Length: 337
Image 1 (tube, one colour):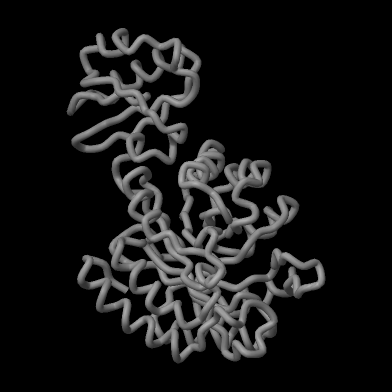
Image 2 (tube, one colour; image 1 turned 90 degrees about the horizontal axis):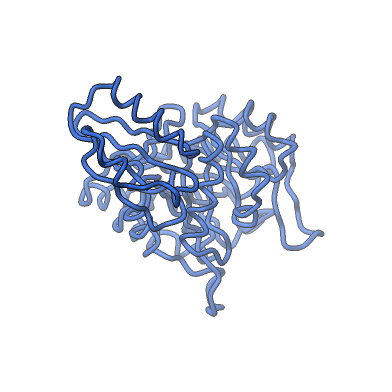
């Protein structure tokens, strides 16, 4: 349920109305704007009589929200959320371009790739220190050593770092060391992890689950936001379908759907979407054209010998071409790189 207030309602009367509504046993999330102010009601609103609230002289109207997600709902927060990451405003006119290797392997590799992608225009660095793998015998990442190497790459380039968190036991370390905490597809519905991330004030990159619906994805974001952390960036990375030619199927319609349903920024991962390096460029162009707020792309200096996902990683020279391509498309749709 949301309560839309009349323009120019005094703050003192807004506060009095909030006190009255919280007396019904629900939480109130106010969004106070210069022209429009909204009170979002979170909790069991079934016992609230809307006519009693509408009787207040400052209330324009009361509306029910059909979707189960509230804090992530565009009705609760009409203006787009912008998440600031080290000077990069994710969700603004500026596109967020996150690039780097699937896995951190050596200091030379991660620092070298970081310098290359920055020179091409990337504004954040990705790299996996902890790797969730289908096989227990596959390379699992350098773990804490990988985190230290990412920090060295940040020091060398100034790029904010994005890396995946696997365990809630490492949250404090990640909050201290990284700029954006990534929740991978396999952990999208790890609700204990999401709840704990909600207690932080660190930007969270939330990837869509392997077969998650858009509503399930937004409900996962709701878990984080319910804890008080509204700095959530959604990431469409392809979903599992009956198709076997590609690793996953990139759902470009999800970008449009999320923009209609939510105020949260959304970026696209064209690398995991198909598992094929030669598809990255056309899908990156398509993602920008359809309204994505950014991209996260796997770039490796030697994909043929990568320890993880080399077949979907592009070389720095190819990434440079991708950046040139998306700059033109970004200008057409009112964005910039």
